[in-house]
Length: 155
Image 1: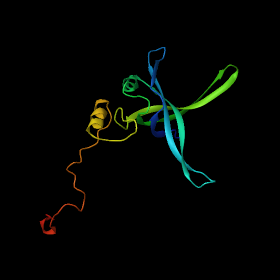
Image 2: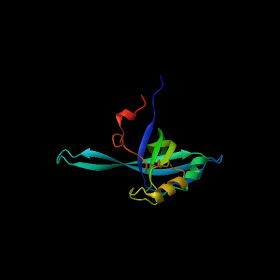
Image 3: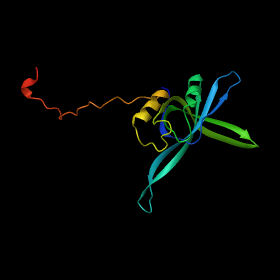
Image 4: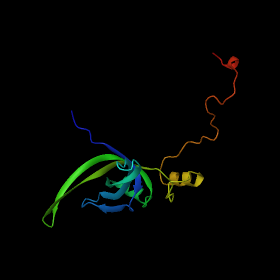
């Protein structure tokens, strides 16, 4: 049985994406992601935000095109796997764990820095950038709110 190496993160970009290319021409898109967690302070009993920072890499043309729609502060979802690498620099052994992304999802509209507002402009921007579009629920009637008579039900 093989091991499972799968990670899903939702957070905000800490910097604009950087695009490099391998010797063979394959694009490598690198970005930083801040993901907030909560922890309880043992002394005060108060919950505090604890940011976690991750380096993310994506490989391929698709991600190079998507990178043009991303900027620092943008909220995104990343699906991928963890990869550990090690090297030597100035006589010191170094290592780090990175996320190698397989999927990227835009979670807010372009320029929606605080993650607020999901009106028409944000929806149009999400559509233009290739993000998911929320369904139109303007004519939605919650269960129990519709008026009907039990005698009208056809079964």
